[in-house]
Length: 450
Image 1 (cartoon, rainbow, N blue to C red):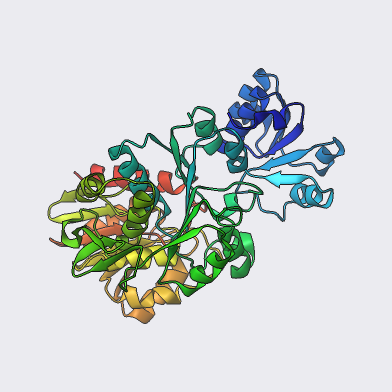
Image 2: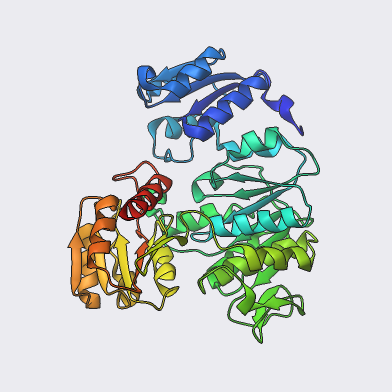
C-alpha cells in the first residue's frame, strides 16, 4: 500500500452507504481511522449499517442531522450521489473539512497505476474494452469504479504490477483532490446530470477534473472531434494523445481507408470489428489509444475487437423470438445515448423509452425518432417523449405502466424482422433502483414471451 498512514487516527465521516460507502467505511476502519457512518435508511432496515456496527464502527441512521458535524471530523467521504447542496456537505465545506469520494481513498491504497475513463456516454463499453485488451495482453488488469466494483476495495487488494482500469462519473470526479491516473480518457461531453450539477459549466468542470492532477509523465487521451474536450484538456500537463472518427491524424487513433490506425500504423479493418453500432467506433479508438500507450500488442487488440460484442445493458442483444430481435440498452440514461442506439439499426424499430424527469425536453431526439415506427413510453417522462414523437411523425404511441408491460405491448404490436429496443433516454430512479434492475426486468420479460 502506498500511503495509508495518513488515515490512521483521523476522524472520518462516511456520508451515505450503498456499495461505495460500505467499502470506504470498512477500508478506513481497517487502516485505523475513527469512522462514523451516516445513512438515510433507518437502522432497523439497514443491514449494511448493522454489519459495519458489528465491526465496531459508529453508525447514525434514519436521516442526515446537521448536528452530526458538532463532532470534529478531519475528512468527509461522500457517497457520489449525494449532491453538494446537501446541508451536511455545505457545512463541512464551510468548516474547511475536506470532502472526498472513495476514488480518492483508492489512490492512496496502491502503487498500481490507474487508467481513468470518463465521458457522458460510452464509459462502460470503453472501460471494458480496455480491460479486455489489457487482460489479453497480459497486463494483469483489475476493473473498478462506476462500472460496479468499488475502487477502494479493488485497490486494497491490488499489487503494484496490476493496472486498475477505472470508470469514473462526474459525481466521483468532484471529490478527487489528488487522484491522478496514469492515463486519463475523456470520451465526450453532453448535457447530462444538470439536476445534480446545476449548469453545464459545472458538469464540464467536474469531468475535466480527470486531468487536473496529471503530470508530464502521464497521458491524456482526448477526443479530437470535440472542440470542448480539446479546450478542457489544455489544463492537463500530461502527454496528449488524440483519437478521431472523422479525420486522419498525424498521430493517435483514427480510421483511414477502412482500417483502424494508431500512429500511422494499420491495426485491423473496421469491417472485422464485432461490436455493433457506428457510435461504438469512438469507444474503440479511445481503447486502442490506451492499449498502445501501455504497450499492448496488435494481436491482443485484434482478438478483443473481433470477439467482443458488448456489455450487459449497453445495446445488449437478448433474444430473437418469431423473427423479432430484442436489445437491452437500459444504460442509455440520457438523450445522446438513445440517439446513438437508434442510429445503430436500419431495421423497423419499436422503441421503449421513459424514466426519471430531470426537467429537460426531448426535442433533440426528434431526428432519430423519425426512424422509429412505434414508441412505447413509461415513467415520469412518458408525456414529454410522446410530445417529441408526435412531432417526429410517429403514428403509434402507447403508454404503459412499466418496462414489463412495455415488452408485452411491443411484442403484440410487432411484426417479423422488427427490432424491439429498450433505450430509455432517462435515468431509472422514478421506478427502479438502478438501470441494471430496469434492464434485468426487460430481459426477464423477453424470456417470458417464449
